[in-house]
Amino acid sequence: METREEFQARIQDLMKQADKAIKKANDYLIRQGVVVDLTEWVTIKEYCRRFGIKNTETVSNWIKRGIVPEDDTLIIEEFNNIRMIRAKPYPTSARQNAKTSVPD
Image (tube, rainbow, N blue to C red; front, side, top):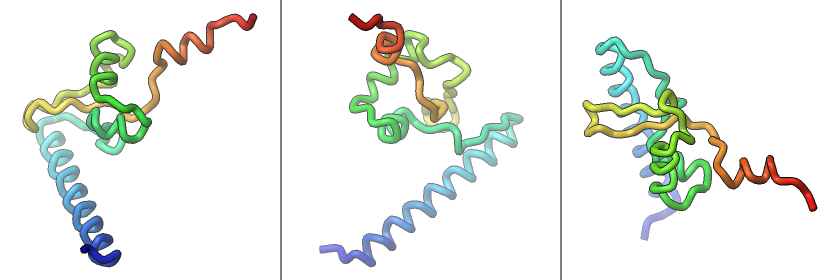
């Protein structure tokens, strides 16, 4: 069984690997003439984790239906066509209905 210290060391290692990957991606994009602040962009899976959405298909549907504006999505072809989404809340129909409903 993994000790607390081993777990923390493993998490630190994963965070270092993630930082290296982000830097590598950012460097590549800059070389291609694209300037992207990767701190504001996340994968759909990470978006779901951050905003408590249970299914990635929900966010994919938001993109298809235009709830997430096209300017707030990014496809990085060099990384297996990974789709990135701007890390901010989007108005879903449930939120919109709550705002527009008239109290009885």
